[in-house]
Each structure stands twice: as C-alpha cells, then as structure tokens.
Length: 189
Image (cartoon, rainbow, N blue to C red; front, side, top):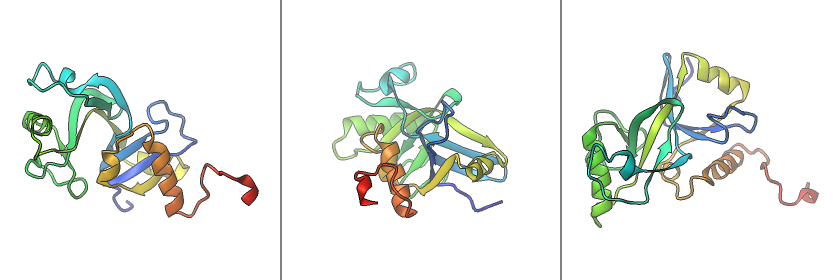
C-alpha cells in the first residue's frame, strides 16, 4: 500500500472520459487498503439546499445549491463545512474542514450561516459520493486517469465551481513543471 491520499485532490486527467468524472475535482475523504472515498466538489446542481432538505428542516431560502458529490448513493446527502464547533464524529479532512452527515450538522451549519452575520460558515451540501474498491484508485492513477494535487479549503469552497477544474489543472502543471495545457503564444517555443 502506498501512502494515503486522504485530504488530496484528484484532478481528472484530460484523457478520462467517464461521464461521472469528466473534468471533475474529487476531494479524497478516505484512502486505504480497503479502497477510497471522495466527493466531487465542482458539480453544482440546480436544486436548492432549502428545497432538498425541506421535508426535514425549516431552512431559510438561499441561493445555495446541492452539489453532485458522485455517482454512488446519489440520494445520500453530506455537508462539508468549516464550523469547528460542530465537528460531527470524525477528524477533520483538512485543517478547518469537516464532513457532517447528522441532522444536527445540517441544521446548525446551514441555519447559522444564513441567519448570523458573525457566524458565517462556508459549507457545501453534496449528494452521493465517489468510491473505489481495494486497489482500484491506484490502478486508475497508474493508468494516468487522475492527477494528484494537495487539497486546500480555499478550493473546496471556490466561488466559481465551473472554473475550478481549469484553475486546479493549471496549479498542478505549475507545481509539477509541466507545460500548461493552454499555450498563449506558440511562437515563444
């Protein structure tokens, strides 16, 4: 087993044409001998969080939308948040970034963020997740389907999720001294 990739971003390589992962960024929540689990963080849907959770909570109507977290169990919802006072039951994924699945986590983080000027928390509600069996992710990485880049909270809550793929792909190229996928002036070669 190689070193755990927990807390890293997987950037879908240009060659990866799987509809579930084309041009996606996955935040790895778990990675070990048993397999891996992560959340796609750059696929917003048109479903508002307040609508998706309306049968469970009385939430304020905001512009926050549910993100498609992956193809596995798409009806399961999780919340990524930065409320250190409510860490659920596990360790942080990254410093200051937590995963919640309990009703209390959803209600408290979302309501406090929407109603309090002093307690603004960043959060994303995601439906489903991405999962890999033992050795599957390692095989896909070896095949060149995924690029690995250190994750950070800033990009998890990036303002423009549609631009995030290109931003992180460029960051990967810069960090690995690989030519950009976009060359502005080919005569400079």
